[in-house]
Image (cartoon, rainbow, N blue to C red; front, side):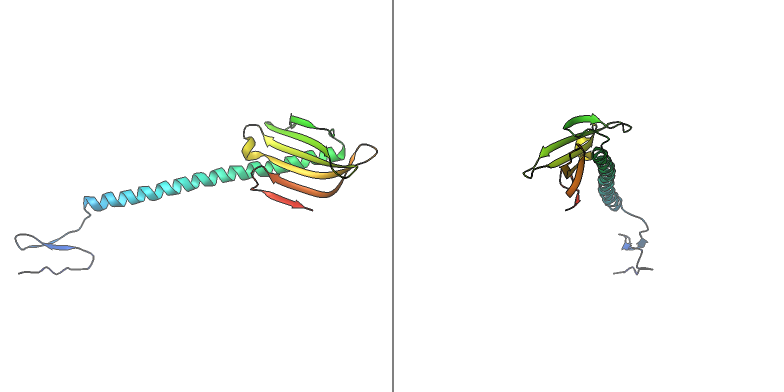
Length: 164
């Protein structure tokens, strides 16, 4: 019986029915189909991950913008530029689509109010909502004086920071 010796380890060799050595220098259809299927699955996973990344970037941008606007509205209230009463769904001037609310509640301590300002984009209220809570003392002139606590949170609890 005759044996075929390969020229290199890279080229597969087979012996034909006539006893002739034949070198195989290509890929079979099965190898091509399996390679294509693996490549398609890898590309599908990468496409899904890039979509998740884009959504996270949009959410991060919305939360950042909402946080800045929320702090700005609170500062305007504390400076006396905006009314210090409970307000619901008021558009923010100069920022199309952004709404804000303010709520003032009494606390158990006399002359201490809990002021809550919330900002959100009306087109995406869940992704862009930011709430800032501050304890303020009522002064005789009607303007609040900030005290002890400040806290910023998002509605889903993913973003939290604050000083106490």
